[in-house]
Amino acid sequence: MKKMKKIKKKNPLALLLHWAGRDRYWLILSMMLSMISGVCVIIPYLGIYRLIDAIFAGTGSPEFIWQNAFMIVASILIRFVLFGLSGIASHKGAYNALFRVRCMVVDRMSKVPLGALNERSTGELKTVINEDIEKLELFLAHNLPDLVHYMCGPVVIFIYLLTVNIPLALISLIPLVLAAAVMAIMFGNTDAMMDRANRSITNLNSVMIEYVSGMKLIKAYNMGSKSFQKYAGAIKEENDVWNEMSRKMGPPYAAFILIIECGMLLMVPLGGMFFLKGSLTASAFLLFAYVGSLYLTEIRPLQELGSAFAEVLSKVAKIEEIMNIPVMEGGTDFPPQHDIELRNVQFSYDGVTNALENCHLRINNKEKIALVGLSGAGKSTVISLISRFYDVQGGEVLIGGTNVKAINYEALLKNIAIVFQKTFLTRDTVFENIRMGSQASLEEVRAAAKQAQIDEFIMSLPDGYDTKVGGFGARFSGGEKQRIAIARAILKNAPILILDEATSAADPENQVEIDKAIHNLCRDKTVIIVAHRLAALKICDRVAVVENQTITCVGTHEEVRQKNKYYNQAWTDYEKARHITYQLKGGAAHAH
Ligand SMILES: Nc1ncnc2c1ncn2[C@@H]1O[C@H](COP(=O)(O)OP(=O)(O)OP(=O)(O)O)[C@@H](O)[C@H]1O
Image (cartoon, rainbow, N blue to C red; front, side):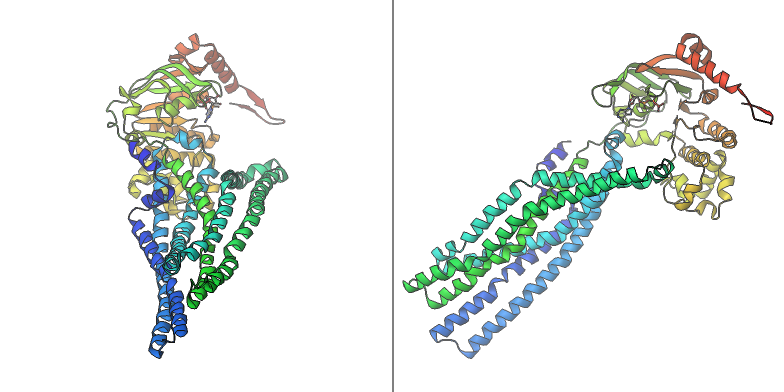
């Protein structure tokens, strides 16, 4: 954390160079080449001045003229070559830096608590990883070398003009002072607008992701036009922001260009006056009338850099925000015993309403416990705290007698397998979807899939385990996806297993298979099942009832039935539902 605070104090450019790692040397090289190229700007002016001076003085020999002409041509060529080389170095540095920053952000995201990421929408995270980081390329590869290049030339020319005539050189700066004032006004109040522009693009991304991923639902409920309105609204908002930006920036931008170009209005009359008074030679007058009037126009591209800089500042701030989410580092090894205890736990998502309070629960090593309770009671919250997706705000969660906060986060995640209610399949082969980044062999993956009762199905696919999920993924049924998730968990072989409503997506044919798969999965493990359907209780040793933001009753099925009103009623309803007889019109009776 201390290290992070130190980095936070750095200015955005220093921070960017820090993130670029050793690739910053490419960027520094690019800026140096750009600087030398910028300095070369003075040479043609200098050459022309020397020629005019020599012609006026009658000392311009043919060698002298050729020498100067060569110097002018060579400096122009060197200037362009160096600027080109600077561009190559800056692109190499920028693309490598982009790669590093993307890896750094994704790595950070993998180490921060899931809860901190859940607070941000997918669109927001996508904007940072994709668009915001991409904007850094424009800045590092183009804007930065340009900045150095366009700054250097005028600075060197100004220094040279000072050596010729100090008062006139200082007067030549007047357009710059006025243009700088316009710039200050222009960028003085862009923060709020830039903030709005960023929010609008983030919102557009979120709405777009929602629109595309929710297409099925949108069609099913015929919400096409309504959803499109939301999407169109987000596009309009983005369009409005940039229109307003152009409206507000347009006039000061025009003023900037005009002011910076009007040096001749000062240089010609004032230089003429100095010349008539005899304090300026004819060639020096021509130098100021020509060079002194025009050298500031070299900085014109810097105006565009101003807005690019403002934009990159906000992007760096957004990346930094993710980089500043504290990671869970350090900690002890995972304990050898796998009993779990919630001791007087208190937790709130929003800091206002408690999702859990005074919550106690003890799960023995290799015990199988079911969490039951009404929707919204806090069952998922209990498992989120055990797997440390969030940290408790009061009390403690212990595994094998060790507080989860003291256990190395990676070791904790490695030793807890979770089968979520909704199975997420990545766009990869079925094989990779089961081994999930581990180095398991095909034999090991198949052994897990066999236990999960899904091997036969996978082997019947066109390319077996090499079948790509992508488009075909849509053709996996909910139960098949769930058995793939169970195969993953079997392969992971973690001593603690959490099943979050794992049986909910099953159809009757799949259910028998899934029951067998779960039975294989749970063997010899400490298991917590979020049991929405009480059928899941058949493999559990004990039941814990979650109600009134706490766990009110724990015991065997019979004990809890006797002691807990909610559970007794839920079980009675479940029993009744199991024995309901449906009489189909003109058909046989079906009992469930
Ligand atoms: N990410 C979140 N941010 C804010 N509040 C949340 C969040 N997740 C859950 N809650 C709230 O915390 C309470 C407990 O939710 P939880 O998901 O743990 O209940 P549950 O028993 O698992 O419900 P269900 O069976 O419907 O999944 C609820 O009031 C819910 O609205």
